[in-house]
Image 1 (cartoon, helix red, strand yellow):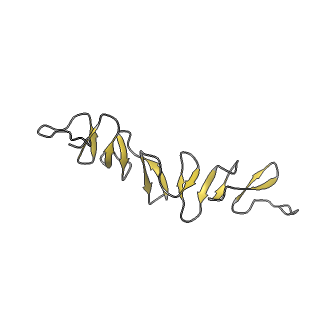
Image 2 (tube, helix red, strand yellow):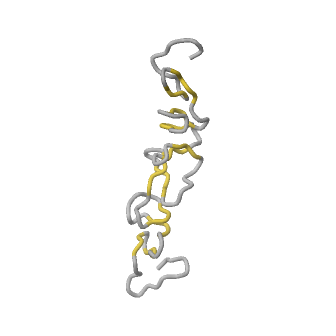
Image 3 (spheres, helix red, strand yellow):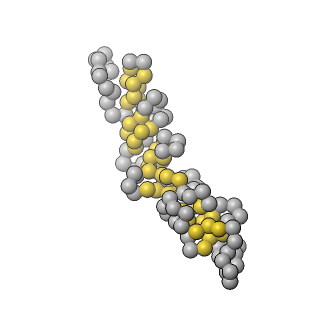
Length: 119
């Protein structure tokens, strides 16, 4: 870098064929390419599935995890959620209905699905 030999590239750079190349602006660190983030700057959220940094969890079926500081997938029946478990749904995928933060095919006896698919 700048004509000097380095054993490792500095933060915000990655190594490719013996050269240090700059990462995308939102990546604090990246690997193998400038768009493959491995960590993000403050104010950005790391999305592990796409190895990108964003300012929010923009995809449905994801929630922001405070332990890993990244967007993680909801349980498969959840459209939106506040955690990874099946009983942490805020809304449901497709034909499922929400009852006590859980998505099911039918509402429990004595409950009926409203227009928002909530029992």
